[in-house]
Amino acid sequence: MGFVNNKDKMIKEAAMLMAEMGYSVFTMDLLIEKTSIAKSNAYYHFATKELLGLAVLDYWCNTLETLHQNTITNTNIPINQRLNEYFSKLIHFQEVTNYCGDPITNIASEIRTSKANAFYKDRLNNFHQSCVSYLSAGVNQKCFVSNLNINSVAWLCVSLITAATQEARIQKDTQPMFRARDQICSLLKTLNV
Image 1: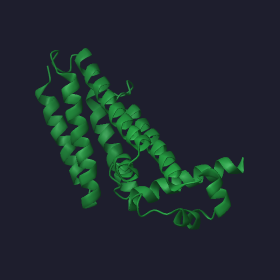
Image 2 (image 1 turned 135 degrees about the vertical axis):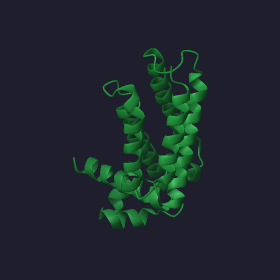
Image 3 (image 1 turned 120 degrees about the vertical axis):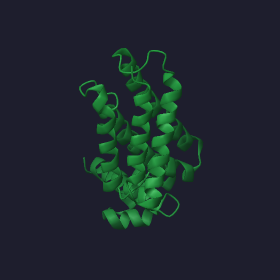
């Protein structure tokens, strides 16, 4: 039972450290110091930094997928409120993670393996699918025009949000997130029925 707790503790702490400082700067020794987990126990769970990095990517994928599912595609939230709800949570996420940007993009680009690349591609595809579901629901509910090119608009939304999270990381400010929200809202307004 203790091994599972230590493993989870390592993943969560490493997730924040890698998001804040980058995968390249992160060290297993720093993690061991921060968590007070015995070195042998830490290496029992993750024999290499890369294995831990992949576990961290999985953690961030699950975290961000939950954020998308709980807002963008959540049918319990009216379609016209979902985008604002999503951006509120995304802005909060940036603030509580000290403006980590998109941790999956950042960490995967530093690990540079096929497995890390797969996490990045899956994250983008899942995010795109969430946007497609949101836009499809809007078309079905006659909130958006019926001839909407859902796939293209979804990729545009993904691009704007991804760029905004990276800009928020660089500037250590949420203003890029607000701008992206306003741009997407303006775009969707032009697509209203």
